[in-house]
Length: 332
Image 1: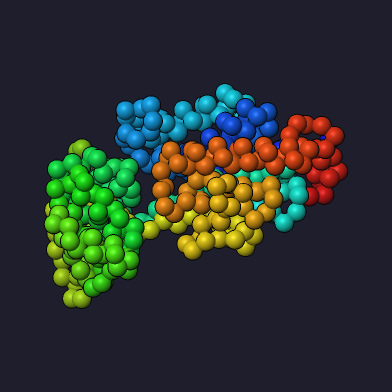
Image 2: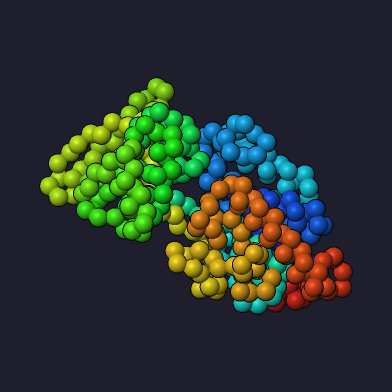
């Protein structure tokens, strides 16, 4: 018999956003009996998003409700979903080995990485308080709600300029707040920003506090502090978009897989295959361009199909004599 808290699966999926759940649905339909480990934030970034209006088939859906539906779908297809966190992952030998916070030790023939990325925040108590109620880190997700309103974008890189330009499609005024006196964004993007009549730039200031009401929770502006003399200015706004970049959750594989600039996992063009055969990556962990739920779901589908094909090539598409023995699993 195998030891307690130790078992073998053909496909291990790490992460539970749209990429992870979609991979689980496709892998389960392929009879691969996947195990999905949800991680520290089951459901991913959509669980902190309120209204979602760009998911095909839903005119409007709450982010947490959408992710619960995805989880339910994965379970209904036969995927095993567990609430746990992978603390260590060994991809240097097969079967691959994952050690979890619960003490579980799992070996797998194939691994799909779908750990996502986290928006960088200012780490202000008031920012956390108004997340989903006027504070956002995704203009393409929430910009529509600010039609005809005034918004603030915080940041000075490509992400901030892209968000500010996108928001001019909806907002009546966009104010970019940057702590320095020049932007880090590409020059061509800066030119577009400065030429847009809807955009103002406040230089040499940082956000000290998000201002808002209590009942209901709603943003009314931001308190800015000058980085030159420390003076305080309150800037009215209906929403604040934090655009200081994203951090892909690639810690588990940082020293095992090639990473692109910013820490994103490198995959072969047009696929979910990484540099290690049998290891696949999908969603925001690999994507620093689109960062949408629907594109993450599509990548999750790709990862599952790639894994199915790879396992078939290894002779492991179906359980049988090629599966590792208990002795082999125990020695992993």
